[in-house]
Length: 447
View 1 (cartoon, rainbow, N blue to C red):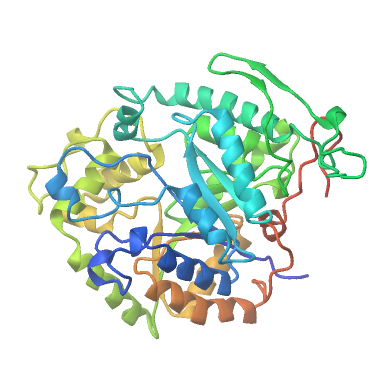
View 2 (cartoon, rainbow, N blue to C red):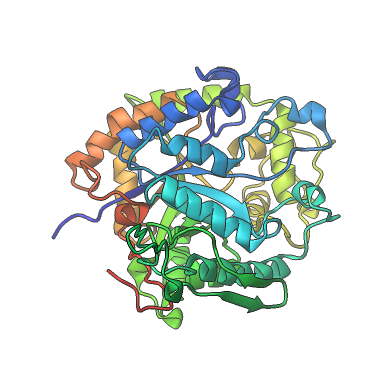
C-alpha cells in the first residue's frame, strides 16, 4: 500500500510570520512591496513542489495605536493580493496561487471576474479563500461603523458564493470557437444568464470572460465555528485548520469530513491543511535556539497588541509578569473564534503570565523545532492519524527558514515516499487531487 501523500501550502509573508522577523530577515527592507523579491520566494516554494502559494489579506491599515504598529509592519505596507499573484504567475509555472477576498466588502461580480482572470493568467492555478473579515478597521474603509454579527456575515457569504459560482458557469467550456471563417466568436446557446434576487444581492447578467481553465478556481476556507464548519462542508475544497494538538485536530478533521455526505460530497473532495510553523536545525536544541532568538526580539508592545486583538480585549496596563485574570476574557468572540478560544484556554488552563502568554501564543499554529527527520515524523503522524491531509506552513523567518525546509525537509519527505518528486499536473486541482467541476448547465462533475 502506498504511503499517504502530504499536501503543502505556503502562507507567504515577506519577512516571515514572526512579528520580529523583519528585524532579522535577509529580505530587502522594502520586501512587502518588492515584486522581484516575492517572485523569488514563490520560485523557492515551487522548487520545493508546494501545492499552494497563499496570500492572506485584510483590506485595511490600522488607524490607532500607530506607535505600537510602527514596530510591526504586518498590516501597513502590503500589495493587493490578486494583483500580486497575477504578477507572480508569470514567474512560476506550477505552484497554485491563492488569495483572500472578503465577502463582506467585495461584490460577487468583482470576485468572480478577478479569480477567473487569475485562473486564465496562471493557466489554472487560482484559489479563492472565502473570508467574512474579522476586524472593524476594514469595515470602516467600506462605510460601516463595525462588522455585522458573525452569523449574519456567514449568511451573506453563502449567498455571495452562490452568485460567484453561478457567474463562473456563465459560459460552457466550448462556448468560444473563435472561428474567423464562420465569423463566430462565441456560440450564444452556450451562454447562461445569472438572474439572482436574494436577501443581499441582485445580479442579472453574465461574466465577460471565458470559463476558467479549472472550471471554478479552488475554494478555500478557514472557519472553525459551527457556522464556519457547516459552510466549509457545503462549499470548500481546502480548509485551513488551527488546532494546536493532535486530539483537537483529529476531532476537527472528523467533524468537517463527517458533514460532507449531507451535501453529497466524498471525503477526498475536501483537503484539510493544519497550520504549522517549522524551524529546522541539525538538532532540536539548535532549532529551538533559532526560535528563541526571535522570541527575545519580540517587543512587548507588539506582543500585547497581537494578543489583545485576537482576545478582543484591552490588555494594556496589566502587569507583564502576573497571570492574566480570567475576568479579562470577553463573553464571546465576534472576529476569529478559533484564536479567541485558544487564548482563553491558555489563560484558564495554563495560568500563564502575560509575558509568557504573548510569547507562546501562535495564532492558530504549532511551532515545530527539530531536525528534518523529527519534522517529517510529526507530519506523517498527523496525516496517518486523520488529523490533516497536509499542512499550511508559515515560516518564522523568510527566506532562511523556507530555504532550510526546501533543502532539508523536502528530501526527507521524498525519501520516505510521502511527497512528490515532481509535479504531476499543471493546475492547482491536479496538485490537490480535486475534480474539475463541469458547468452546471451541462452535466455532472468530471474526474
